[in-house]
Every structure is written in structure tokens, then in C-alpha cells.
Image (cartoon, rainbow, N blue to C red; front, side, top):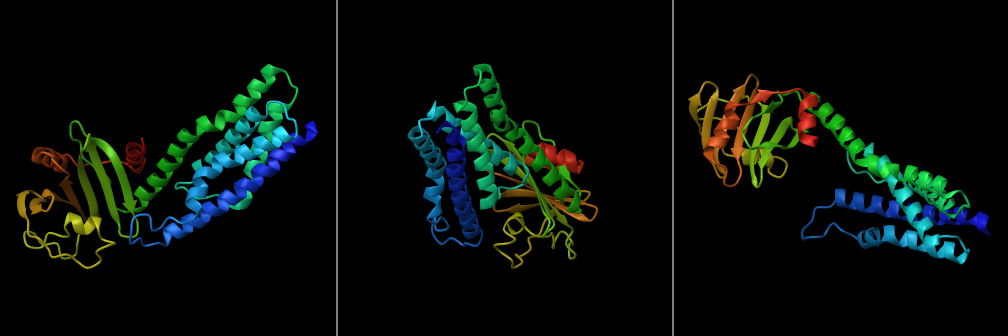
Length: 300
């Protein structure tokens, strides 16, 4: 009976993981194609199952191991679950964004994870060997975050390099880059500086063909941020010149600085309670950085 412990755990884990992966994919597809009209409208029946499922599968494995008189059934089920979680997280760490694994891949990872985890705990091996193997199986959990950061850096660096705009980052004392993203479809680079609950937004876009300040100063910050939700062009607002290739104008969120850099237009706008001097400093200290450096700043 002892020889059946690992196969039993592997089969149960594989079936459970395949079901959860299929539900995860179904919910991801539903959410991607859903336009919510109420809060939670895009969350379907898989959500509660996905919440409790990762705990239910190890519990079923534990009950099955107890039924087959396995030694240390609970530690075996726990190590199998953690080994599987580490394998799934490593697979996800190689993806720039969360993408549900296929049911077949999830089943394979769970079969190996639960099978090997159960074997290590239930086998009559020397304790030092079991501890060493258990730590080795848990290593992917520690490797997940560094690997995921590296994947995100590479993905963003490639996007920044392809956007075809100057990668401009301000230097404002007390602020740091909290977010940066390149929208390749609309060709907009967005950088956000943060300091506690304050933020300064920087948007870099191609210089509009009709850019002719002070009457035609390009789109407002709101039009750039909501360009997908508001495809119609907004009413242009005039601006006033404060320096060479540097203008300001009053918008709903406060005074916005507009800076022309070659064939690009930069909008520097303040968040809530940001002193005007901080926004002015950001506009005056725009510095071009490399794609790799911007990716490093934005991901950490």
C-alpha cells in the first residue's frame, strides 16, 4: 500500500489542478470580454471555487493519504501543495502578465509536485536527506519574486524601446518613479512620480500635427489618460509660454506644464495637493534615460 501513496497524491493533485486551471482560464476570458455595469458584474461562478480550491485539493490529498495509511500524511500533503505552487509560480514568473496555464500543464505540474512532495515525506529515508530535499522543493517559492521582476523589467524595457518616444524622467526631491508604461497602440509613454499620497504624472506623446501655441496646445491630460474611453477629440485649451518650448495651462486638476522635445510633446500634471513648485521642478528636470534604466526604475 505504501508504494501507492505518491501515485494517489499525484493523480488527485493533477485532476484538481486541471479543474482549477480550466476555471481560471474561463474566468480570465470572461473578465477580458466583459464591460461591467455594476460592481462585480464580471466575476462569475469560478471565482469562489478558485478562492477555496487551492485549499480543497491538498485537503483531499491528505484524506486520501490517511485512507492509505501513509506516514505523516499532513506534512506530505502540505509539501506537495507547496511544491506544486512553486512550480506554477515559476511558470508564471516567465510570463510578463498573469496568464492561466493550460489544464494539461497545470495537471503535469501538480502531478509532479504532489507526487514528489509525498514521496519525500512518506519514504523511509534518513531525516537529513528528507529535510534537504524538502528545502530544494521549496526553493522555487523564494526564486519566484526575483525572476518575475526580471521578466517584467525585460518586457517593459522592450516596450519602452519600441514606443519611439524620448524616455523622459523628472528629478524632484522626495519623489520616486512609482509607475511607467508604454502604450504602443496609441504611442504614449506614461511615468508617475510618487511621494506618500502625492503624485506627478508625465505623459509623452507625438507632437500633434496642429500644435500651434498659444491657441492650439494639444490634448489635455484627461484626454490622454481617457483616450480609449473618450475617443472623440476634446476641446483644445489655450496655453501661455513660460520659457523656450515650455508652456503652462490651467486644467481641472491644476496647472499643467507642456514641454516640447523635438517631435514629442510632454504633459506634466500634478496630483492631489501637489505644490505647484514640485510640478514646475518636474517639467524643468526632464532627463532622457535608456529603456533598461526606465524599466529598472518602474519595476524596482
